Amino acid sequence: MYDTLRDGDNLIVDKISYRFTSPKRYDIIVFPFQYQEDTYYIKRIIGLPGETVQIYDGNIYINGSRLDEDYGYEKIRNAGLASEPVTLGEDEYFVLGDNRNNSSDSREPSVGNVTRDQIIGRAVFRIWPLNRLGLI
Image (spheres, helix red, strand yellow):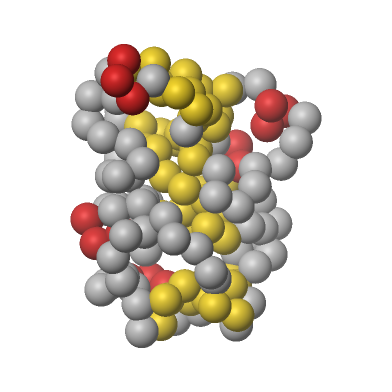
């Protein structure tokens, strides 16, 4: 998630609000990695339930329209699973790391789409290091 988050950042994760509201595009979420116990991923939601996501020529497309966002600081070199259109189910989310060319995310089969019941919460506040204290 570099540059938004860095190794060693300590975060407060809101585990309550998604009980009352749905996750939104660009929220930073926490979810478990399915193949390793006590391992959690932190990624940004890009695709919402029912949408079709595709990465073409380094750009993200949602339902055929180019997504205008600037969280990833490099053009995407590897579209992975999203080189072909990925249509999300009614409770699925497509997530990407902000460091798009060095991220294990929904483009990889080992991560894939994240279902709502997998989401632990939304990262909202950085408490460490103190020089980067604040809202995410």
